[in-house]
Length: 134
Length: 134
DNA sequence: GAGTGTTTGACAATGGTTCTCAAAAGAGGT
DNA sequence: ACCTCTTTTGAGAACCATTGTCAAACACTC
Image (cartoon, rainbow over all chains, first blue to last red; front, side, top):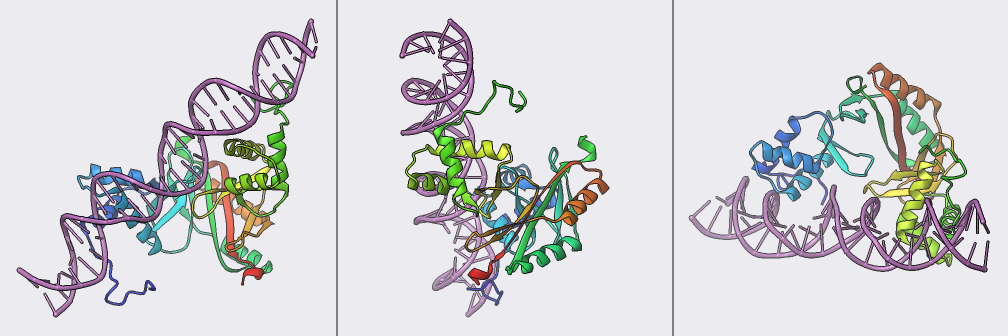
């Protein structure tokens, strides 16, 4: 039941998954599942919305896309580098910059263990208005 | 239209708002609107769910409660001190510790202005397993 | 090509949150 | 108290992102 890939248990490279991957390659800000679904249609492919959701979730589990929530609680997605990092997101146009900060990582771990918490994870997103939108 | 209290434009102290406030005073971790609604019922009061939502949103706008989203995107709430701070939340039991870190504040602002972003805000939540749940 | 487990898609179902709007309740003046 | 004006409330409908269902289509191995 673990997700260890053992010969069996392989993910099949289907037309639909390729379409989602292609769509993800076409933008570098965060988009909702529905927007990604629309993009796929515009690229001439046809993939069910449920499949888009399934594929995005799988990719997120595999660490190939970032998923976060906008202020309305909607899930938004983008492909990403696999290293741990955070985002600086433009509130107006959605432009995104990946940032990383070892200091923050250290700080969160320190705070957490100081309070006896184990198995730490954290979310940190920075919102602002980018130069172009000012 | 500003929220400055000018005689008119006042928020009326109704039974319902008092009930929500009382419920909020009864716990110190994050709860969903529905859980808060249930709590109110248990305390013998009766307040419509829509009213609970409206009141919580108003309190959040006024900075008297914190609202954040759990991993499912649901809004969860708790009353809080008004100073800016973050949370260390137990993934299992919901226990919450308010933490603050000037270093993080400085870091986010630095990173943001470094990229030309203005009007910065940020979200940072730390999740883990608390000592009691280990 | 047949057999088998996986994936898909159309659609229904879920569930949190917001909207609607008529009825109820504060506030303030007389 | 009574009246008037405005705000607030509540029941239920409406919304809408997301997930579940399940038979049909598909990829893979033999």
